[in-house]
Length: 329
Figure (tube, rainbow, N blue to C red):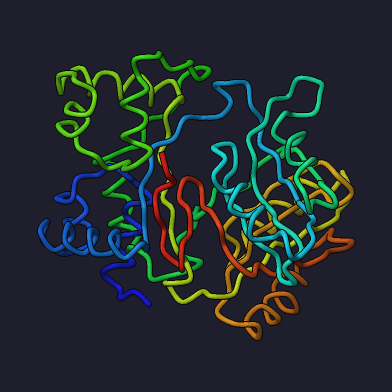
């Protein structure tokens, strides 16, 4: 469980992932050295990783939620293979040990994606249920106030003013081949300094700065903050698959996304057309959420629960013994 200062630092990074430690220190009320030390301690402990990622839409990919049913004796082997695929993110094993749920970036070209074709031939795979994500109501970790002590509103406003996120302008642009070392370095550490990135690429710091600005402005490059929420006091999590009518889809999905404990919500294809990820402190806390929070949302006509037994992967981090680690290169 993190203390208030650590929580405020993580909240600041959600708002401005590449904000200098000096600015983060100003808004959290601590010295630059203290903030840097606290962040590095959390990073070494596998609690947080800031990563720079390329928008999958650049390659013409769409996000899908894939549910893989397996024989229990094949779960570990399949989990290891799945999580190493670069197309896969946010993977977990469902309670009962016979299903893996993951997010996958796949091409939308009128035929079964090759990665799913290969997966269907994997020994032990019994069924694959793939659903396209139609709309995301809230990105992962969007509202820190639902989970941990958050920054005061004036501090949050100051951070946004002094280090605003670049607003994408126009469609994402495909990165150049020469961008590969830059993007690889950011995938390892989204907070890598321009000097470090210059060293990795062989460029000048000026060229690094200009290229970062171009990639960010086009929407090609974005930053995410992977968290081991179990270390923040939320060891119980579940995927909720919900059903509503088309007339209520947006209102119901938005209402679910706004509930406390919800860290992600989206609309999907399939009979159950909404999905949400909920983080709770215990089974009793989750029951309270179902009976007192979800029960207040109008338009829900049915739901199923998949309790997450073991988290395998975040946006760009493997989860090993509860710690976030970089995937093998």
